[in-house]
Length: 404
Image 1 (cartoon, helix red, strand yellow):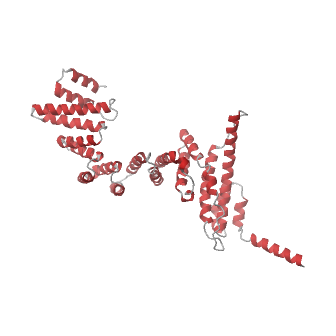
Image 2: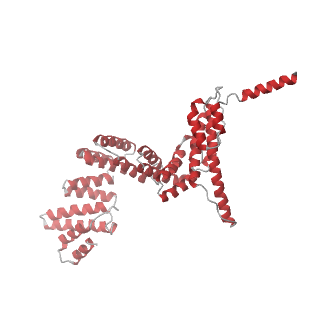
Image 3: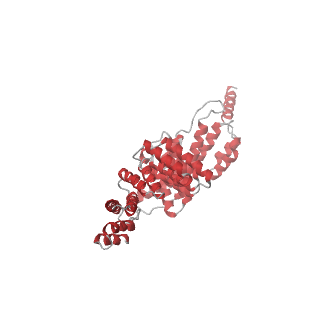
């Protein structure tokens, strides 16, 4: 009798152990195919009994994805050994399958963790799958290399998927405890290019997200910010969009008032919207930062566009002093001085102004001898002509330089 009683208890305990396994979970757990299991989970998420079952289901997805990853990385290891030992031919492996498997594992692990940290049916929190993060983090770098291979092939959608997932996962709180030091040298660059691919895909939300991440890397900040602002500006459709963009830029300026890229962007927007506001902004900025090259140069260009050569020269001299390696500024400075020289009725003053113009043009030539960014050639020749006349060897040399 006692034996029968004990068997009854054991049987009851067994039935209690599995009572929580819903039919939906059993169906998901039986599937050995990732796509099938993912589809079942999507269709039956609301039918799962509690958070514990949802965590269990997502962990099953994670394991299926990691099985694919393990198979492909195992082949890679075998190939490396074969090459090192010279023992035989390498085997092909599913490159995109490996990358997709890693992406699937990352997504499943994050979802699993979300439910794993919530109370179960008994109101208790008992995480079971905390080791998943380290497992998928260990293979995550494959996304960078495979993304680069797909970039060479022109498979832009795959590049965005893999580099985007690499960047997204690094920023996800789920992976906060992982050691990011090994990828510090290239993570910012990956984020920047992920942003560019997102922009090409017309996904501005993702593009901005990746550019913001890239800007956290000092080596990528300027380039990422430049392209981000270009992307934002190119997406403007009407006047209201432009005004809203100016407001965005102002907020960025408030956070980083010394950032020359932002200063230039605001100047550029005001140039097409409101000349008075443009000048007011630059003036106020120079009151706070009198050596701002961007503000000084743009004040000079505003004067040039207004046909005020004297004021233009004043601002451009200051801009050249702030940044003495800019050939464009020296070219415009030379042009302003040449105009003043040609308009002056005082021969001595005209001669001095031409000399100063030639000094500016010669500096532009020194900085940009092939005229790649500054077309100093003809204006420089005109300055030499004005000072030395048509037949002087220096003028003829300047003329020859202008035609190269």
